[in-house]
Image (tube, rainbow, N blue to C red; front, side, top):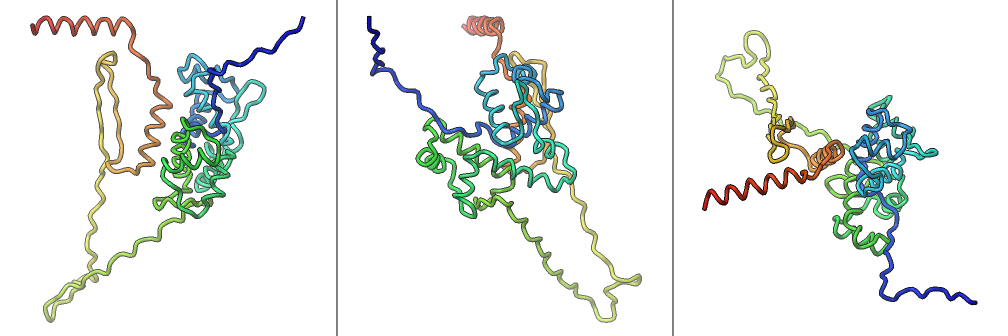
Length: 281
């Protein structure tokens, strides 16, 4: 009796596959490595790391994207079933010369094959904004349409963090040159009356330079709903760059576990709202 191969249904959509790319920026991968070392998770399994981060399932997209990105940046390596910090990661976390850390960041930036190819394409050239770069990834690098924007944003954020992309949007894998020091304007001579020594009786007088005042801000945010009674306290400079703000958000996402409110809380809240409505009526 012959067996015929099943004919695939014409209505079944074929799943679109994408070229491998880091799902999170480099800064978030560095923070993950810091977390792994600080919690003594170096060399442990994905399940152990996920549990420490508050994930119940290692297949959660957010967790798997973080773990995969750290491997692509050359910061984690899989040995047997454990994930270990690489020499590059340890050089970043424990630098002998702190001035070398930006170079280690740029080394990690060049580890993913996709990023290496983009660096060759745009070296010393202006990199397009995320929406246009996403289309470049879609047409030239086989990144699927649903992932092209996030892939482009991750590359731009990583390049800025590594110091390879400046405000002019020119990609310099060797590092953005430091700006030239500003030349102070010449001081205006003060007119003096004849016979008066402008230097004073005790030699030249240097005008006092006002000391810099602290511009740090403090935020005490009292939470509400299921988090009532808790507070978030933050101290930060009054002015920061977009890259620093993005890194702050990435750090918060890494260390905070966001949970949905329990069914009991939702039910209690609904009853409270219903009571308020009846009272208003």
